[in-house]
Length: 376
Image (tube, rainbow, N blue to C red; front, side, top):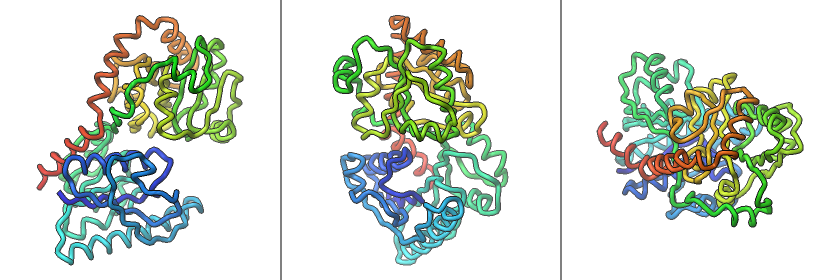
């Protein structure tokens, strides 16, 4: 299968969507697909995608010229995305006019840049991670798609209601994990590497700092459970304050962004791995499929997760403890329960590891390729 993977994304990037795109390209290739990644030509890290993400194979990449105004805020993003929409359409049309046969695979980095792609006469499949407005471009797009890969059933159901005139088929595929890379590590060794004392009680949050994640619950939970040290991997203290407008507690330790290979050691050093979610944001409450959750599953540590519909699509009480969204007291209580009752958590940890292996990138790619073949 020949796939043009079109993504309006800076590659490589330190953001999570870059990992997802790179790992899916690698997994498609491992399943025998011929993949070409098509992205905008933007300022990025001067290295290859293979080197940056530690892939086992090279990913053929074509960088199309765009108006690189993304750093100028919302207007710059629209300008850059519009330019990518036009140039990617012309590029794909040119390839079709040369007689090439391929499937177009896109991912929803915005709400419109793939809108023209169905006009080239090739099958178009799109991976959807967020809700979409029913504007003219989206209605046209959905009406002419060959298939939608939604990261959860909530999204798929919403699209079916919103775009009723579309007869597109749906596949439900949450995000994935590199099961080989995120194999469990020894806690004592991890703590020696990271300089964490053996008997410290550690609750760990891994992820970038965005306001839709509900990060402001952590200082309040830290005040409610003073015996626990909270480590936050993914941003600096000033980033946290800017996003949350909350004052960090002394028990909170900010590690900043770290290389992917270090995250496995941070997961191993923890007693509890925390997944946030808030009712005040639709993305957080209904749509998110956090990659860190799949990484947590394989880490052999207790997971404490927000009891949101999005998270419930992936795990249950068999694999994790749930806290009431936006309740700092309940989050602190669940973290305390996990730390003080380690033996009682063993069944959940084992169930989590078993579930985590189901969510490998390679398994995901295999199922998506089968879904796309069924639409041929």
